[in-house]
Structures are given as structure tokens and as C-alpha cells.
Length: 240
Image (cartoon, rainbow, N blue to C red; front, side, top):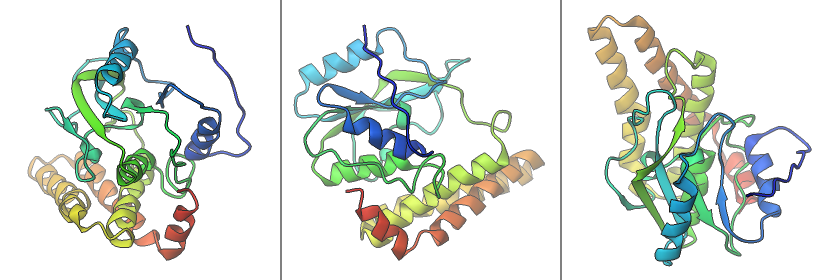
């Protein structure tokens, strides 16, 4: 059984709300479930067992499958691995992250996430910064959470644009301002190759809705990349 404590945030913003929650955590394992995600019955016990048997790890991420079909969401890595700055984009999302409570937890960057300037990637940025602090993480795709997969059928183009802006801003923050040039391959893949390739392939299939989807994603990522500037980076440092 869990004791549930409801805390009302003083202003909107997903990352702001999570930071309020982090202030009230003293021990245990931290998770960030959505209102529309589902944990399999044995997930939490498996997560707890993992941390008990693998003391060197501070973070566990798991895969995500569609809530209805139980089909694995395509962008997740197929094999287990240690978390690195270069693979966290494909090794976890907010609802599939579990973190051991430690004294040096950082806050979420409140410029990222739903309700903020950049509508996603807050958890990618959070994992990246924890790894920079020396946290050790592991990705286990044998464990999973269930959540509706984002698609043309259940996400508006505006939401897609907002989410995509977060990816562009995150890459600029970590690679350019953070001087982490190891992310160059990730940058080229996510900001250019995948969306442009998707657009071209959609045209070959004469699939206009899919073309618009990839075009919107590309425009959002470029917009986020351009919009994130030195002032944004200065604000970001206040959440470390």
C-alpha cells in the first residue's frame, strides 16, 4: 500500500510540479507516472529487486509498449545496456524512469516539459545531468510500462510541434552550451536525418498526412534549437 499525498502547485508546468514533489521526498525510489500510463502488476517489485541486487546503479529505465496493443514503441533500444549521454533518448521516457533517492538530486529544468517554453525532453535533460554528476544507470527492456503510443491518430500537430521543440532545445543546451560534442551524431540523426528521411519516404508512399507529421516534427526541432539561447542556458543553471 502507498500513502498518497496531494500537493497543489502554485503555477502550471510539469517540471515545476515535479520539483515541488522532489522537495517532499526523503528516501525510497522516485518515479514519474502519467495519468494515462499503466504499470504491469509486478513492475514495482521487479524495480525494487533490481536496486537491491545491483547496488552500483542509481537509475533504472525500462521500455514502453502501447497501452492497447502491447506492441513495443519503436524508438526504444532492443537490448539492455548501461545508460550513457548518447543513448538516453532511446533508453527511457518520463514514465519509465526509476531513481534511487540521494542527497545530490538536481531539480528539473523548468524551461522544459508540458506547460513550459519547450514542450518535452525534460526527462532527457534530467537524466543527462544526473549522469554528469556521476549517477550510474541501467536500461532493461525486459521490463516495460504501458502508454498510448503517439501517432497521427491521437496527437495534434500543435502538440507534436511543441514536443519537437523540446528535443531541439535539449540538444542545443547539452551539445553547444554544455560542450558535449559526443552528441553530434545524435544531433544529426534527430534534428535532420530522421525527420527529413521520414518526409522523403512519405512522399514516395504518397502519404501526405505522414509527410506533414515529419515536416511538423522537423520544424519544431529547428524552432527549439534556434529559440534556446544563452539566456535560457543561464536560467537552466539555476536548477542544478
